Length: 255
Ligand SMILES: NC(=O)c1ccc[n+]([C@@H]2O[C@H](COP(=O)([O-])OP(=O)(O)OC[C@H]3O[C@@H](n4cnc5c(N)ncnc54)[C@H](OP(=O)(O)O)[C@@H]3O)[C@@H](O)[C@H]2O)c1
Image 1 (cartoon, rainbow, N blue to C red):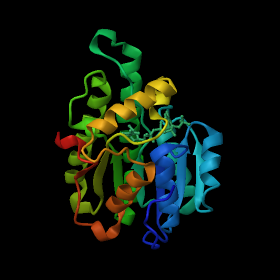
Image 2 (cartoon, rainbow, N blue to C red):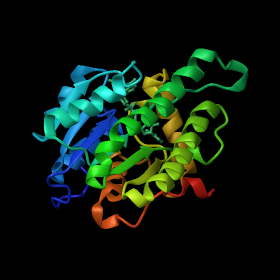
Image 3 (cartoon, helix red, strand yellow):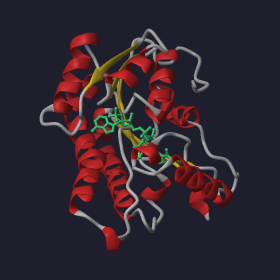
């Protein structure tokens, strides 16, 4: 489960991780906690969040829909109320949708934009005063398909392309203030993301098998392998990197 970031690099830091009840978000919350940070894990469902919290005593949780009115500010207020500071915001909560142009429907487009673009923007906005005080970092989760075309998933790809441009633009805005903004762009990673998008387990397995064949290293990543790079981008020792999109996909983006 945990990434191999065992030294207490983040002792005294506070990290907010959205989507911490499963997948990459859970692995990131655990990795930060193991590396010394106090973590606020955020998601809609209380039960999986509690399972995440049970994995490490430095993980606290907040069940909230980040797309709800006022929710981003409430997330940030909660972390500051509990621990007095924020050093890292990980905009990880996200969703995908399998939707060809012929099947495009307004609600799906709106929902993808709300979760993958609007909520991370408002979370970053609310966190900014606190990140200025700590010379903190924002880590956004993109995807290989944020910079590669994705037939059958154009709107997902478009939201991740937006995330990459937010990352670069905010990085330039904030560079002189000492706040760094980077993105990690995973390739196919074994989580429940495709089930959450409505695929059956069989269809999701087929999709992962297809992707494994295409990926140059012929591996599907584990969530901990992605969390490793999220922590690397947050690490104060990496302070000269900002505005970068680090693709972690076994070379998929290269083909
Ligand atoms: N897995 C992959 O292959 C892959 C590849 C590239 C990029 N990514 C990106 O990596 C990130 C994490 O994905 P994952 O694979 O770990 O997927 P996941 O297991 O489906 O995790 C998404 C998390 O977001 C939370 N979430 C969804 N809607 C929310 C909302 N409105 N408010 C608060 N929390 C919400 C979910 O919990 P609740 O349902 O309880 O809210 C869930 O814990 C996403 O941004 C995804 O696009 C994943």
